[in-house]
Image (tube, rainbow, N blue to C red; front, side, top):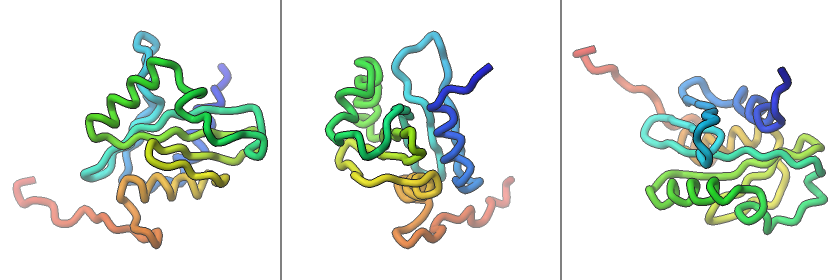
Length: 145
């Protein structure tokens, strides 16, 4: 069975994420709309929709993310998550192995490598500070455990 390009994109990025971050692939053929990946770490979580374009990063204009890549149900589902206070982003992989990230409030108009995209996700969820240093620790486990 072949793997979809969106899954390959996720695998390329997720191998660089820290072990304390939980990543869950959403795969329910009976529900339309939920985004591809759920990220959970400490007190923050987020959703990302992964897309693949068979073009290179240089061939794409940057006004397409919410308008052209998402189905109407995906748009609605993502906007509902945003309205509910969740973090959402669209991660797009290109033929030349570069990655683009679109966020509802800003668009990053430069290509990322898989490692850089993983670092961006960590900053987005507050796992790393602006210098890329680990800022969350487990701390003490309660004595009752």
